[in-house]
Image 1 (spheres, protein in one colour):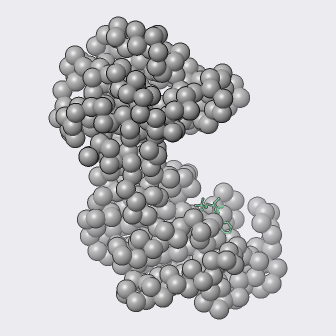
Image 2 (cartoon, protein in one colour; image 1 turned 90 degrees about the horizontal axis):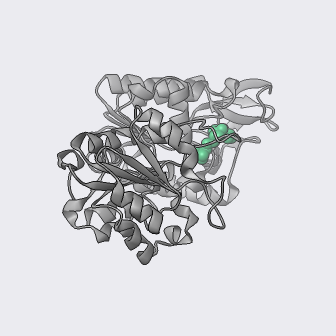
Image 3 (cartoon, protein in one colour; image 1 turned 135 degrees about the vertical axis):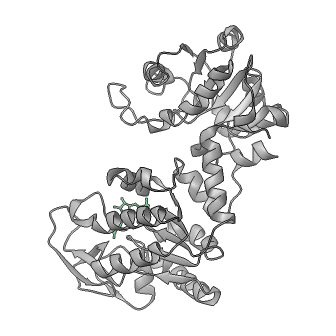
Length: 398
Ligand code: AMP
């Protein structure tokens, strides 16, 4: 592989895989452009060098070929604005005669956005012929789509083999993601605290198992904590519980103890009489929640205890909220954790926040620029920390 920042794109056509899968409202207006703006530095560097940029992306989940709803043409005007008025052209297809001609005619400094890759079912199937056709459109392949790095699709992984090692590389966004994930998983300074929250134990078993070999402390919060508390003999009322995972929770606790990893569960909880923003609330020990009540946030003692662990950490990984932070009454725990992670970062810790809801939380509470790295790839990040090799990364490095 080649290093993006050291590569000179002068006179080259760079085929850049981006993740422009942004949310649109019913008027085709972009409601959150984070994924688009994240790719801007990569595009700008290529233009500045005197190269041209061919952007390819998936968009939504179209079922039967082309459709208005899933057309990337709705993004062109906004992309032009993000690139300060640079020339942004659009090809109505991602392969074929028109796309080939437009790519061939593209001038240095120009950007061409190809139509949605997923209008071809070959994309998700990782079809070699389709990948080869795409590869012919550019001189150099840049993967800047960390959000799809866990998929072995034609444009994210298979395509890489059609470029020699010195003509395939990560873009700036992907490089940042890979570097920070590698630092946490393979090069962490200890103490290393993983904060894992969210609704379901079943979604987080593999990441917990893998982190047992890496972290010194694991904080478990959110709805998933109650399955652990019940496995330990606690009374959890109506709190979220995956009965079929009680055995798994017990095993994780035993493994942690054997490996000397400290698992922190919330000693107390904010409880509610129903799952509603207007519910009556109280607090209770997390292992003694009255019948008819449910734990919807970590309590004040849990906040203090968790924050102390976080503040003495040198490496922090955070995935998943501590409570139902979407509702005002149950967001205090997640907010307190966000603040503690920001403070630890200020004192020199390296902190990586990833996964849809924890990213939403640090953004909402204003801490996104006070942590070391906010990952853009929910599923990809989770799979990376589960210890899996991501096809999008492997294909560039091979
Ligand atoms: P996940 O996608 O698994 O990371 O879960 C995120 C969701 O978990 C959020 O929508 C939270 O509202 C929800 N959640 C967090 N804590 C709890 C809890 N104690 N009970 C029920 N849901 C929760």
